[in-house]
Amino acid sequence: MNCLVKIILTLFLIILSNFANGQETSWPLQKCIDKALENNIEIKIRQLEVKRVEKSRNSVWNQLLPNVSFNGNQSYNFGSTIDPSTNGRVSSNIQYDNFFINANMNLIDFNAIANAQKNKIDIEKAKADKEVIENEYKLQLLDSYYQALFTQELLKIQREQFKNAVFNLDRISKEVEIGSKPKSDLYDVQLSFAQEEKRILETEQLYTIQKMQLFQLMNIADVSISEVVLVSNSSDEITTVSTEISNPKIKSAELNYKISLKELSSQRANNLPILSTFYSISSFYYKPLNQSNANVASFSNQIGDNKNQQVGIQLSVPIFNGFRNNKKNVAAKIETEKNKLIISQEQQKIENQIALEKQNQQNYLQLQNKFEETLTYAKASFSTTQSKFLSGKIESISLSSVKNQLLSSEYDVLKNTLQIEYTNFKINLIQNNRL
Image (cartoon, one colour):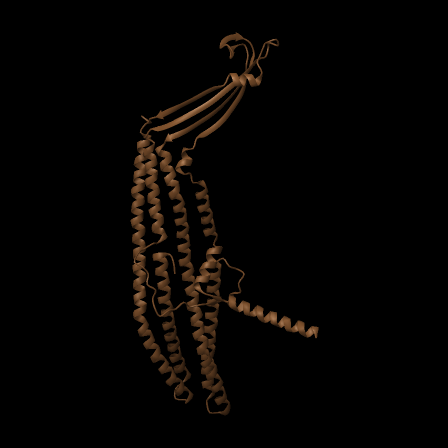
């Protein structure tokens, strides 16, 4: 009894496992893109770059925070030296310890303001660059996915039509056996059968290679390629996308232009005055080394008695530095003009690409009716040709020719439908970075 329960439980787990595996064989386009974005190393690098830029950003207030430092030194003076207690010159050896804390802060610094604004844009630029990589990667995935999907659907058509070849071979073989057909007819059917088998094998091999390429592009290795089934996202309607273009390449170019403007402001700020304030506190301790009977105050007393503080405001006005700032300003201005042109260049590229894909889409839509009409005729022709072949009115070579026409017509309709779907997704990705 226990053995029977174990067997039933084992069979149940196997069935459940197979069901779960069967659920995993379906790979829609969106699932492929989601998994690929999770696994892509270049995108992970870009994500870390965004975090690095965010952590390295300095705000305006952070740029203006004071710099505080502590310094201490110990020195020994031998021979004729200055006595720190009297400021008079004496002939003695003296140990001298000096301690001071300095603090300075810029109150008005136009360069710091420009750099802080530039750092903020740098974060957006890093995010836009990551989106550019993602967009290009999605387009690669889309192309690879549909290349495999085209082959998958072709294989379905070939396998479906192969059933007819099996039927014809079986029927002609029986008729040859009973003597109602000559053996030459069997040879013709066997040749056609072998050719169809070869075409199916070639398509299967191509399909396997294309799926391997797709999953290598997705950086996924723990999937049984033979069990993967791609899913068409076909729809009777074309998704309408807005006329507004929000391609990340354009966004990246615009941010790059803004960065160059802030860089120009930073260069110009080098010619502007800087208002700063400073504060320092210092003290010292001294001890004669060759006067054992000298009356020297303790370390703590000297540090307290010799304490000195200083506070002030400083204005630094650039006057002349060999025209270096002017040259940098001119170079920064040229860089700004160049980046502005790059925006127009990227917009032109994207607009041209969208226009081309929309024209392709219109072409596919116009061809669809013609392909469907041709398929109707091909089906009718094959039906009558099959009847003629079975009645012995035509040879198998004529049937093979008509059958190939039917195969071609079915594939034309299917591929054109998928091309419409593929082009629609491609336009959405180029225009709005989404499917």
